[in-house]
Length: 451
Image 1 (cartoon, rainbow, N blue to C red):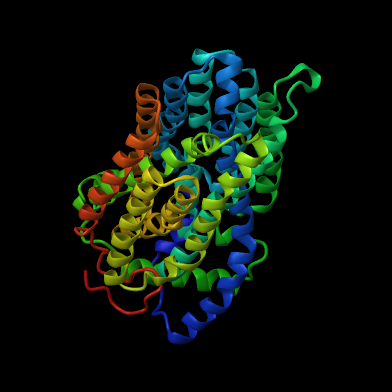
Image 2 (cartoon, rainbow, N blue to C red):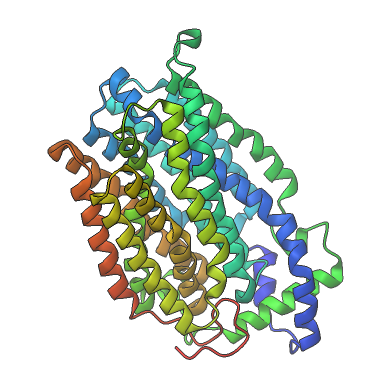
């Protein structure tokens, strides 16, 4: 087992106010050393999993892939991704983050580039399944990796910064894909083929950087002094002791037996249905607004993600107490639902405003939901619990695009699909009222939690 995690759970001496001040002074260094590389990896991964949204119309013309087949293929990524997340996190806990994240990046980069050789619906389905299997574990792996470095006071902010990668990816990917699609005919290739190859290979290049510069944990970080490593071990041990769940047992069973984990899964499932429906269908919806070229569609597609970036950067830090966690989660889900209702009924300008309103809360909701398992579990149970929440939630990433594709093909419109997603978010808001955030501290709060 990796010492970076085992040591963090070792009982330590009492953690003083002076120690807490020293950790606060050390935290900016941890953010500087870890977050840029992790965010960049997530940016590339999200571009590679969602770039088919910009290629949808072009692949339909060149390969005859229907709206329903596109929705199914978009969702199949999440089926294999979700099924392999828990085993992936448990493997990473044993073999180390550096090796496992490097492996994930090499395989997903090569397979993403291989999407250029899709010939029809069958090969489209196979490649999406393989891509999901290759990338499985990146997000929950990073969520676990952050627990090796940050206590709960710092982790929500680190998670929020990491989720900025999704916003950056969607801001960048639209204009980038729009430009690459204009390479149509170069070298006898379609524009979407160039897009897949050019956007897939950077993951392989970045894997080299991860292998050489991402430490498994504080004990293997060359830029930390022995005193700093000891301080972090004490901090994480004190944080774990403050938030340790009652009872013990098999790691994954501990998560499976906790009703609060299942409530978090239900909320996250509805959240993921809505977010991936927007991701995979927004470019196509924008393309119906008029005679727009690929670059124009890509630029307009970036607008809601600017709002998402603002929300991820500014709002998760408000989750300082259990009451604020609950209120922020409820408000976020209802605002997302309202945005989809506006997008379903308004004209082009109003619809973009509605999508931006929904996107504003995408990663606020996600950050707060993932405070639930970290408040109630520790050690291997936390590794399995984080992956369990993400695994079950991402099944929504399979269901949402699949259902949306069927609705679009059956009705010729995406409006009914958006209304369905809005209803699911209202349902999730009701479920969120039952969530509790454990016996310790919530996010940045240094005071006790009253759940």
